[in-house]
Amino acid sequence: FQLTNPFQEERALYLAYKAMSVPTNYPQTRIIVKDTSFNHQEQLGTHVDIDPITEVPDRMGVYPTKLTKVGIVPPGATVMVYIFPLQDLEHPFRLTGFALSLDLHYSLEAMGI
Image (cartoon, rainbow, N blue to C red; front, side, top):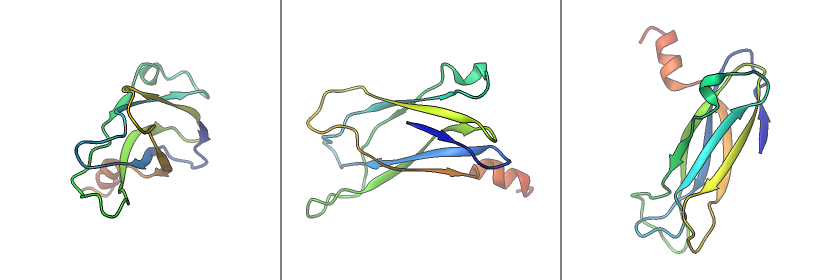
């Protein structure tokens, strides 16, 4: 999928997805974020591998979601997010949402903490 950072500052991109306790039926998945607006060489080969295992027990067929930071999106940039399952399991990777947010590390640093 494609998204644009409408903010004047860089924002962290977080993905939310379904998770299960061990053993999981959701595959480990590789996320690649590529900047289509600028030629940021450092982003071209970067990826984040997601393992959708959680410590939260599955209850009555309701599975929790996890949130993982997958990259930084420069101000005004448009990025493509590629999702590649690394395993062939019973269920596909299930993306439930995404968010562009101030990066916690960046925010604390800016506040002098």
